[in-house]
Image (cartoon, rainbow, N blue to C red):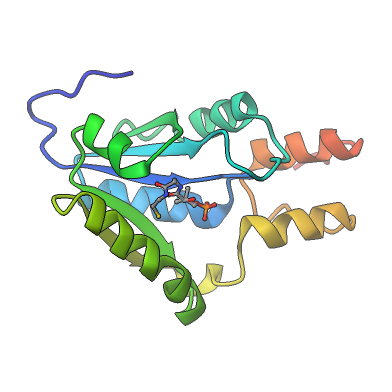
Length: 172
Ligand code: PNS
């Protein structure tokens, strides 16, 4: 785990399953990195759901995607999110919101997290309009049914998913 430098005052945690990481996640994390000094992409492990990609694959892919953004770090967490956020010395949880339906899903989590740790706030960032259709769930569905996902996930993620499906990676 990286040490927090004294100049890094405003650390945010961007939690999620990232199964897989999408272009929506990338946009969200990059925008959060403009607002905060440091953004920790925190990948949930030991979820009840069986992930498509292993924890190690998700970590490796996210690290590759964000390698060029020094303010972004990739880590894993399990247990209560707010406990992890507190351990990291972060002040906020960042979540992307595509729609009113997303906000309905996020709202009770925000309230519960605030109940558990009032000092940690949740910051909702509206998803870029052009990415409103992008979700890990739909990407997996399109992928399973043999659809094109090149515009929906970063190239390294596309390559991994193609390999899982046994497809050759197209030349770009
Ligand atoms: O990418 P996802 O699956 O929408 O992310 C959901 C996530 C990881 C943010 C959520 O499941 C979570 O915070 N899990 C940690 C468990 C927890 O702290 N639960 C109680 C407070 S709601």
